[in-house]
Image (tube, rainbow over all chains, first blue to last red; front, side, top):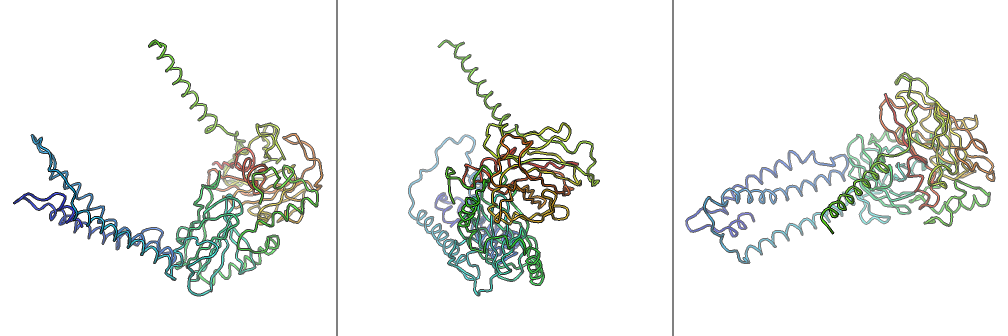
Length: 316
Length: 228
């Protein structure tokens, strides 16, 4: 591409240097070197790392896109640099450059090459999303996920976002709720992400998981942790005054350590769990009218004399 | 218009814009509730005890939002109640809190926050009785919470038992039905600003109760400044 475009756009004069070939010979080794460095040297350190299969997949995607983008960018820089040096205006040269007309071959080449790249990326991206090993590539798939991992031995973790903290429920361990996110290594995890107030976004950076947390919606995302370590969880949706402070740290531990933690936490939090509403895929706001009814029956005057008064903008 | 008049007009307009910009910066960005200093005379990181006294009221009659629920802090020197939610404590110290709950009850949207966490002993005293959790869905017993996420502190605030009690209507409250909560926690050794908040959706008049006073420093959220 580089050679043909350069050659056509600046045809050499008879007997003059072949600019297209020159540019190509500069561009080719630079591009090869850049791609090798990007893929093999910098690639393993690219975000979000390789802590889970989804993170590893995202890192691979970024590496592929970098390898595709680098030659294009290098061509632009080489062409610009070459033009500045070789085709600069000389002292005393006030003549115009050669007129430029349409050129079918250049246009066809340009359209073909860019179309191939875009279509390849579309197919590549779709494959990465749909491949059963990736199952959505760590993104939220809504309440009815199209792509699911193989098998059904998921650890279910409900992520409840609220101003300005995440809590996590473990329905397979009695439905206890905690501020700690702890996951076992090697076991597929199904995150059921929801919110009980405004819109948030659950972003477990090192796991490559990012899913919007919307009130009344169960947004499902999958991942399988591959390494033990610390996970940074942040809210990625501007959600109010303390949005910037809405983060915590989770951990991926061995299966035995996770089982021990979950069993212990379930027992410790048993009395709190009894206060919680029954586990549901969303933090069911329909319980709120029940609270309102109970309050009205008891004649309770809450803060400001009501819970959600009729004059409030939105009733749950 | 004559040239001098045009210059004067332009100058006046320019100064007016500058003055407006200064007002906005000073009033809205640099202004804010005052900081109550509990660190004076206390050496940090010695485990010394600091006593912080606060109250939460169903309304406030001292601001431009009289219908907003609000916390107040008592000045440790003058004992005056100040309409602020920003206070300063020494690092590595024991903070003994007393909070008077004058506001009525409101159920927590997430009853998980009825659990006491982060206090010394894992409990709070409500009218002298130690409790480790309050179930806001089973009775009229929680008005607000005092929560500092940065140190995993969460303490539900009890509310007057009688749901039909005539709540204090002039803030800061000095009389009327209320509950007294006492608890202690250690301030972190790392200095900085630790925000605190209420987890009861008590922003009446806003979507799902999560606006207004819930999002405004000086009402139901604030900062604990930890200094060395």
